[in-house]
Image (cartoon, rainbow, N blue to C red; front, side, top):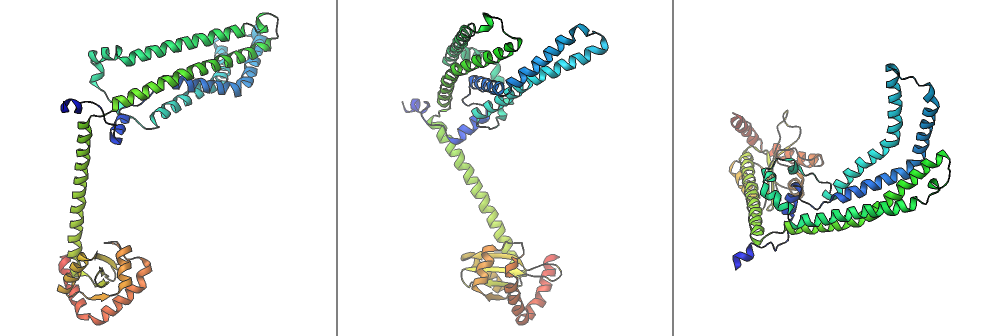
Length: 367
């Protein structure tokens, strides 16, 4: 019984599981949202550009009708006439096509959270499995999509029927009107049809997206065993990273301890901090931090310094600042130049024998 329960998807999906599903393209999405946004884009473009577009089309049509008796169809004039027609058509249709492209991109971004899904483009043999294909065709999700398609068909049919009944009452079909009225009629008819479609498809899109959201969340639910495996994997990764950090820290500590013997001076706190510095004229622009440590590691630095005769100077504020802002292998901050220079000046005067020996020690280390 316990084994059966562990196979049931009863656990909420983890952040890692959701992220991996998003990369595979497994998220709630429905084409109705794209249709809604594209229709809205078309409606917006028509609302702002319909008047100027209608006027330009009317002028082009009037010009063509006036020039029609004198147009000579010849190989050298067809290209010019075709170019004029394409320019007029592009000016009328171009903004609508551009708005549809932008709406499609925004629709995809809204549904995916504007995240890339690279794994969708990879080739997957499972998609060619006939049994899986039949299972998808006769699944509950396919039935729901069929119902939504039927609702879309009914919505479009209802919108067209209601719009047609309203438009048939227009004076265009019962009385003579001026030629320019035809453009205004087409504009108002298009806006009326698109508005009705937006309203009806909006309800269907909301229902479809709600179903996809529910279905995707249900499919991404995890079993207890999957949650445990993912937790173990994450903890294992954390342990490996922690071990690597500890190894890197130990290696750096060994390198710092090995460099203490070549230091000019060790500045101490005196018990909490210890910072080893070196300065070679003509080579270093400023004193360089060879090693630094606090508490136990500071005591190890001082022990090694005593073994090799490295001068140690107690200066609590300078030692604390060097430990806080100094970086091993880099020169000290410029704010500490004066304080460190005074320490080195005292050390150079009182430990001349050490620096004579230090030159030989550094040459031996370099060799």
